[in-house]
Length: 353
Image (cartoon, rainbow, N blue to C red):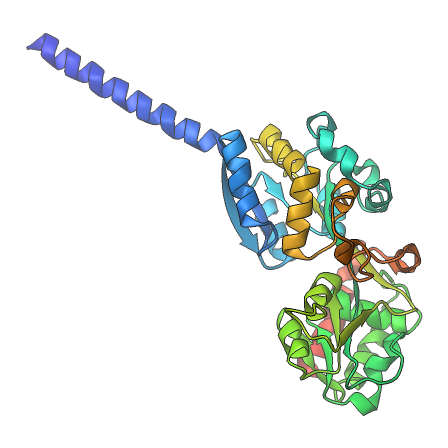
């Protein structure tokens, strides 16, 4: 009887141990990814899982600020994230990122050196991040409603387009383009210049249809708006002859604008650093990057992928702007404590105006 009980006990112990090991194995093979919505082609995640045997737990965020809250948490579970440039600068300052082992990312050689050089502005030596997507901020306009040349931010304050101007529902973007319109640096730390931008935005209220996010695309495609501040990836969809509106066009104004980057980073708290680097390397593969950028619509920094793409992409000035456009664009930087001045100005424009 004791032998039977012992045998049963041993069996139970073995099954418990096996179950524990299986659970641990399952956990160890799960890569926790935090990214913007619809920012990786879903079939590519399945492909990576099939090729590696890993599981990818994909969670979406709606803002850089939301991501920062998650990464600052003591129980942060994420292994790979896709923040924007100025946020990466902040995360590095707060010592929240792991240095990337570039030996594990041979496909890094596919990234155009000019985009690595630009990334140096917020991640010196690209120690903590790898470029994923990039783009510009500009104006989408309806050529049926706007007959004059569109080459300056000033047109967003033209009274003839009252009620037809869509500004972007983003503090840094809307204040940023207004600062540029006024001849100031969009990364200014001068409170008087920020106040001047706030006053200009308040004066614009009768002309504005409102502050828009993703819904700006639908509004412009349907022909309801004359001019809208948008990201270049959204402009690609707006101006697409099949899915968008053939009467729409896009321009980066002559005064300059923002060139932005979303890069791949590994939180310092990650216990799956090598797995995360394997996923980064996968996403930097030329064929994978080509398929991914064509699905998302935002510009790839992967020159090997560009070499595989059709001219409808590579010759499109929205997707692949000329160097002179990039030369007049600026990257957002972390404002540190001065961000409070921007927030106060934005609240004045957004809630009190």
